[in-house]
Image (cartoon, rainbow, N blue to C red; front, side):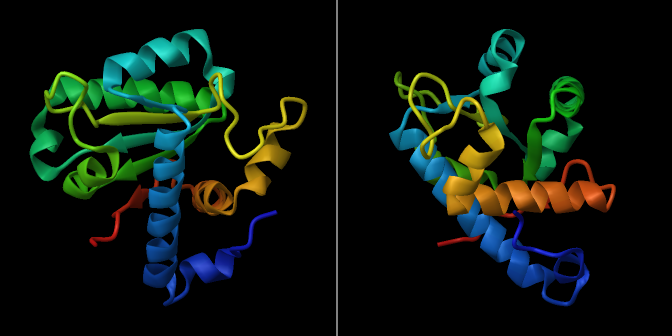
Amino acid sequence: MCNMTLEELTSDHTVGKMDIVGNALEEVLSKAMVQSSITIGVYEAAKLLNVDPDNVVLCLLAADETDDQDVALQIHFTLIQAFCCENDINILRVSNMSRLAEILGGSDTAGEPADLHCILVNVGDTTYGGWNWENPQASQLKDPALNKVVCFCRESRYQDQWVPVINLPER
């Protein structure tokens, strides 16, 4: 059950709720990194979505102002968004790439900057928050941080905002 009501999201406290969701998202990403239940990179995400979309619980699309001019990236985003909407995968846009890089380490195993434009949180081979395969919705409710993020996505869809934007709070 979502803890946020439509009135709470549309009230003057929206900025406070956005901070709460941003903090929850940071917690979700940290847990996913520890549990190896995260896929980082546009092409890696597309491969996973192609073979195993049922195990994806959240899709993050991240971009800075300079990335808004990258037509190829925007086409990838459009295709990924459409696929996620069709497969009932929660989607968020993240606008603070530098904070996202801090949370996720910012580089791949070879030391090259990681492609943080698309990130999937999935259940994969390990369990995320005690995943229940018969009832995935119940599994999401077991993790309070993931529940906050999923509820925010759901409430945003109720307001016809299919891809809400979150700015990760600075530390």
